[in-house]
Image (cartoon, rainbow, N blue to C red):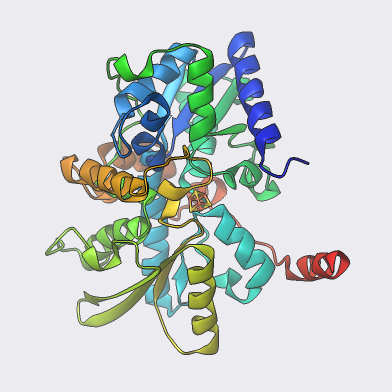
Length: 384
Ligand code: SF4
């Protein structure tokens, strides 16, 4: 057991290197929203520099056959999660609905707050949606045997390594995602292969799982999933355009943020918490009935995924602010800023998924949770 996770890091880098060298499968890679504003730091770029195109180019140089964007699946997550929220509004709950894309939060809920498991959205996290789509929708389009595809996720997150082995994430007897590499590990791999990252010309993601919106980009920062979900839930639920696309009350680094949204006369109360202590404070207040919310976003890492445990280490004390600025710049520069307007997402529903929360969507894109609180108490006693 390695207390700082260095052994796991090395073994995952080695595993990917071996797969790239053997290359007896179709090698697919996807990159999370927060990676593109941090990976450059490994190669001397300023924190917050947006190096999406260089990252795509480096992954192709490493030998991946297809480079897809987890942001595409973040848009899909919003379609599913936003629709689930609208269903709950119609059916009277259960509220609050909690976001579910942070595996460290899911672990916390299963072990310490099992009373909230029914409140968690059943939507999988974006990379766990993209993996199964690659092995079904994409495999069929290309005529590839899904058994012959290996999916690697580049994530800011160390918790996602455990997340991929949850039995609930198996699809047709296969894991949706085979290997998780952190942003830092990808940096290591690029350095090992002596790829000149900083001078690489930009390249584009592959289609059709590579197109995304500004709403998907902001998943990488605290408040982003909430804002993206509100953009879509408002327009799909009320059938009219948002007066303003930005929800600035849920932005910034305050540990707990609150906002009230006018939903055609109904006042929706939402909250966002990030970082372990803030999360527990908020959950305890909800449990005691001191506060009420309709929708809550939880991210375990301070500042959300831009501050994830797998991101590059930095000595810049403003590193998180600069990464956050990078993320909002991507959103502002995007021509499409709402998940439900992503043309590739529309096509995916037309060709394959039918509609949000359909039978196929439930099979591939949704999950279940398990109360592990008893097991965890027994473990605590044994350790005492
Ligand atoms: Fe992973 Fe942290 Fe993001 Fe949660 S907040 S998904 S633990 S990087």
